Image 1 (cartoon, rainbow, N blue to C red):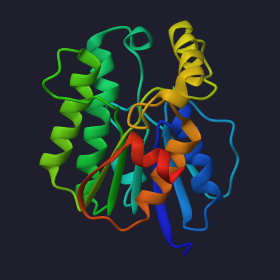
Image 2: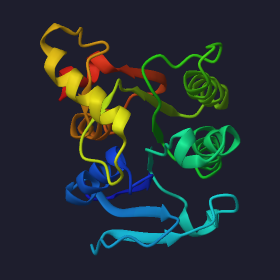
Image 3: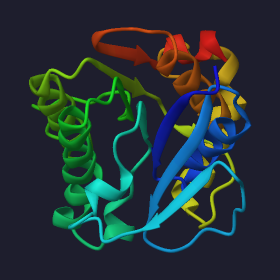
Length: 215
């Protein structure tokens, strides 16, 4: 206990912020590396901030670490194009996974989505599915894929469609199967911490239903 290091990606996002908070509070980690585009207003003795260019990250300054918890994700609207969306949701996670293999990281945990499918006609689901397929091909010591449904929580930016969807999801949660029921970001974050430290090996998918049960 207290001897592991973690690298948290996407820690300014909905789930990533919760994952970072849990990692800093946990006795499991004595070092938490956070690669970011812009500095975060979070001061903590365990946190090591690295302001980087994600296209050319200074790998040797961030590795080795024991665990990577990847919460990178955007929207096509925010990214500005499908190409930029793919870069954030596919290319960057895969690049860090390859670095994880090189530096001997024991666990790579990443958030994709319910419905991820490399053969999907839906661009979002297809990109997430391609990431999963490529991560599987990397054959890391332990890869954990978390597939949440609609995420509940307070985002920094306002998304009207999501606000409406979240409202409907809350109203109908009692009648929605847990496999597709909306899930709070804190529940996903807790699941990531629990499973990352559960000593699983190989390629594992943690479904939305499983995360509801863990939370």
